[in-house]
Image (spheres, one colour):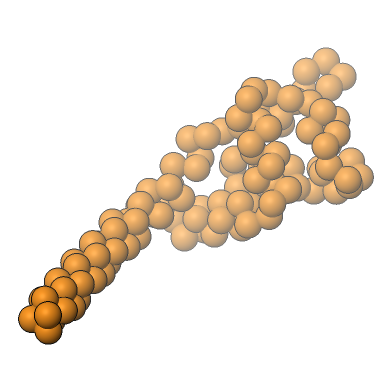
Length: 118
């Protein structure tokens, strides 16, 4: 089971839509900080701050490539969060199945009442 600190930093990093968009762009491959900043209406220092949060959560790595700083996604770092979420997915699927069964029973009861009133 992942540590609480790992989960907290991962979910904190994922809570921001800009950081999620950065991760989505990095899913297509490594990219420079400048290229990452292009679609966002914010300063390069603001983008760098988002990148620091992602680095702290171990979701990305920044590497120096000649004069450029390139970012690399670490998708394996998302695994602890995905595993934590999957525990609750099993629970909710069971709840939804129970609700579906209950609604089916109500529908059958109503149909039986409707048929007996005819």
